[in-house]
Image (tube, rainbow, N blue to C red; front, side, top):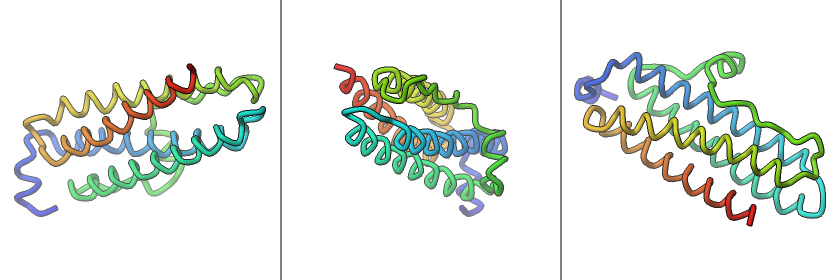
Amino acid sequence: MGEKGREIVTLDLQELIDNLTQGYADEWMAHYYWMLAAHLVSGPHAPQLAEILKEQSGGELEHANKLAERIIELGGEPPRHFSELTEKARIPPLQMPETTSDVRALIHGVLELERYAIGYYHSLSEKTRHHDAVTHELMEEILADEVKEEENWENLLD
């Protein structure tokens, strides 16, 4: 991003980059958790649930890529080492059920993380409103995805 593009951001740039870096790290962890769950889930509905988890895992990676692009535009740099991701992530760990065939417990664990993400992106959306139009739009886009994902998981419980 150019000089004028950074100039119109009326927030502390380093704090904003730190916030986006946390989101980036959280998305990588969610990507990992969904893929792990896809590999571990068992039982009669496992193939269908594994496909949903793998698809959602890809969506989390897409979010991470968009966040990385914005971090770079703002003059920052995404973490270079995976260990930095685990340090910077604040997403709670996915609570895998004791029995991998306990699909309801797994879905409840996934819902907990989706709700965490909704809260986080909502707070960043509010923080950037009227202060950074580009980041605000990105936060609204990711927030809309997370809200839709929460609804999809809730529908699976019915």
